[in-house]
Length: 96
Image 1 (tube, rainbow, N blue to C red):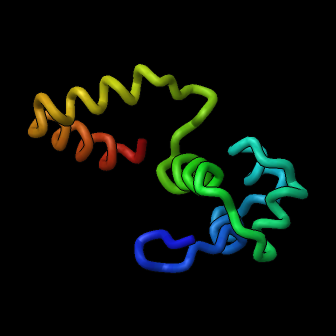
Image 2: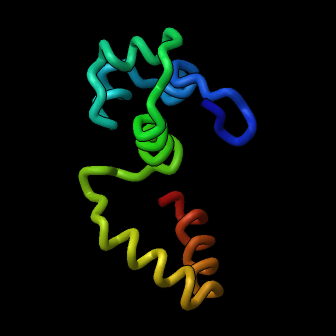
Image 3: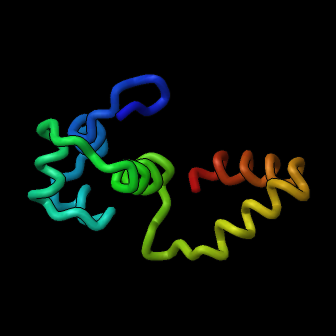
């Protein structure tokens, strides 16, 4: 899979984050052995890829995420884009 124009290698991301396989993969609901297979070249399904992106790149805690949170963000983005951008800058500047 590709992420931002580069081939995505989950092992490199995991190592950069300083996590062992159990920590990294359990955060997205994948067993350590399943994650190990993805790290050694088995094709990663798109839903797993997206979960890895959301959790380990975007920093979303899935245990706290709710569908309505995403609905509110989408509504704000479409109805008041200036406020949405300002809030995004504030969140990014605060280190989350």
